[in-house]
Amino acid sequence: MKKVTVSSLLKKKQAGEKITSLTAYDASFAKMFDEQGIDAMLIGDSLGMVLQGQDDTLPVTVDDIAYHTRSVRSGTSRAFVLADMPFMSYATPEQTYTNAAILMAAGASMVKLEGGSWLCETISGLNQRGVPVCGHLGLTPQSVHVFGGFKVQGREASQAEHLLAEAQALEEAGIQLLVLECVPSSLGKAISEALTIPVIGIGAGKDTDGQILVMHDMFGISANYMPKFSKNYLKETGDMREAVSQYISEVQDGTFPSAEHSFE
Ligand code: KIV
Image (tube, rainbow, N blue to C red; front, side):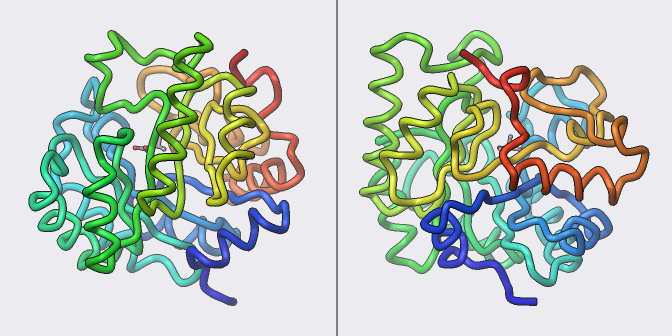
């Protein structure tokens, strides 16, 4: 099986094929997701909530992400592996380079940063040093206290325009992938159409170039609640492998996310 790369993800977008993605935190699940044919796995700082039981992602450290990245990498043969840079680990370009090096050495093939155009210098510096970057816009969970809660972003026309401009600025700075979280479907579509690079949605409607879910939400086993944009595939199928396989098929054929799992 051919390894998934940034180039093959881009080709999928160009061919109109949907990209499938899940978070993963350990070797056993990574191996199973890989065998089922997932395109990309993210070692998300969501691990603070789903593995550590924290209220948000802020307490997660670079060492936490590096530990889980090593585990996921060792279970992965084919899928593309990217790792989150946690809260305040990329506050300055120099600090970002040091921390990105730790995550790349742990087995990531790309790092993900939350935020807009204030990151442009950092993104281009990472690229120059050989580190591919994924952006993250919309509901960026590390800014939960700025937003005053986990809220849908970009509902006002001015906010939507701002997010589109930020996405374009990030692409120009050199990101090769963008995660877009919790925005109205119309904005998910507009941003995906405006960018050349693939846009992976989570609560961003059906028209993004791919989808990602937190694996615990997809299995319906998250401790606290089930987000509107997620779906319990384990309940539907009764089997973990079947659940992943059905998630992949429904993303590929455009059945997921339906209006029920999207925002207006
Ligand atoms: O941390 C995470 O799992 C994420 C996804 C929600 C995209 O950033």
